[in-house]
Image: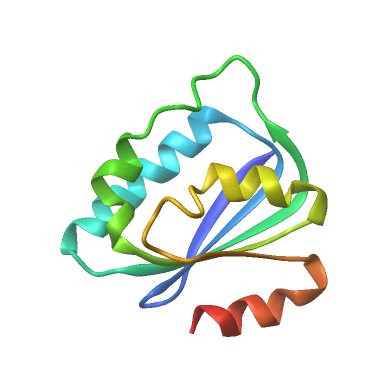
Length: 118
C-alpha cells in the first residue's frame, strides 16, 4: 500500500509501512533520506508496520548502497509491528551488523518504542 515518512522532531523520523512493501517505494524513501542526511546530523528512526504483508517479490532487496553510505548517520532504529515479522525486520535493518542499536516492539508498545529512541 505504501510508505509515509514524517519528521517527528529534529532528530526523529517516523516511517509508516502499510501492506506490501515495494522496492520502488523504499528506493524513493532512501533517496529522500540521503539528501536529508547530507548535513551530517544523525537521526533516530521509528518504523511502524501497519497490516504489513511482506516485501515485493522479484525485486533486488540486496542493494546495500544506502546502508554503506549513510548507515552510520542513523543513531537508533525502533520497529513496531506484529511479532511474527520481528526476525525478518531485524535482518532487513541489519541489526547486529550496524553500529546503531535496533529494537523490535509489539504494536501495544508504541510509546515504549518512542521512549527507547530518546
